[in-house]
Image (cartoon, rainbow, N blue to C red; front, side, top):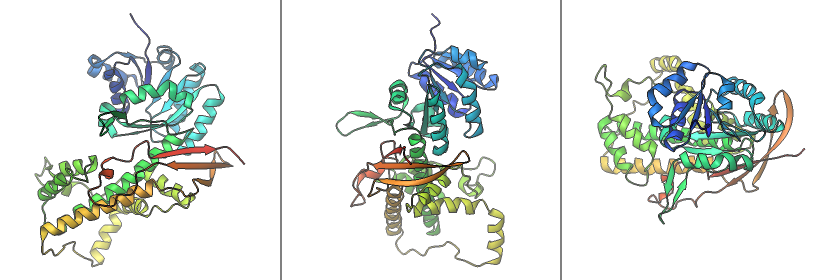
Length: 402
């Protein structure tokens, strides 16, 4: 029996195809579409045995293959490509169909899109997805916004395919929750990424200190692996240890020493700092992490500066290596606390007004943040840092008004 698909995914690049496979692994019939049909065909050819896929080469065919109310996930490039895809979909939809944007869109764009789509009788969900390519396949953290009605339609599926966290009492919670109306999901994902920028920056600085004290990359990997068994346990610490053990296949040198010293940005860290300035919210650590990335992109200027200016050579005189490593661990733990606390900072008034430029016209928007986070840890062995900033940390709500 050729039953209709239960959900559809548009965009068959790595994130989109992996999310579609995740859905199929959980027993859902998944419709597939990509602007270039070859990518759709490749997913079916390489992974068709993993589940039930309904590939389509034309958008009307794709929409018609999904049961109503339709649940359609967009995994396309943020910006104009997202708007173009929405424009193509709208004439093909029926009332109460749901479009979900799973890309890293700016939350103000999501507010605009949600308002427009809702006015035509459909639901629009801006949704943050965290975990990268592996997470999309094996279970990401998912941060959807939109109306409560849209979450009733889409939420059970998202909770099903998300990562899950085991609680001390043995129960299991999905890493997915409704964030609030319109742009709340993408707002939370933006802050999540801002925290991660700062987290990665302080991890890099810890590695530099260890190297300055004379530890090899292999010894640094052992240190990070050990840290990952304690209160610094996290995905970023884990992969730092793994990366530090890698060798460059061409030269045999440590891979970390061969990688170009230039960091790229996709926008979310910058947006976090810009929004913090609009809200008069101090995010010094996150801001410095963004600026460090910007500095790294000017490698030509840094090369000239190194030739013209004298500075410290990076070496650290250490009398007791073990004590120094422990001090770096404690400092890294404290820096992580600062990074997380800046991202989930409690607004004492719980309401902050911010003026937004929107579609070439001035409009007033009110952002209210309700933050739920654990009491700040009082000792280095507190387990609160073991969880990455997740969907339940921040609730953003836009209030209509003057």
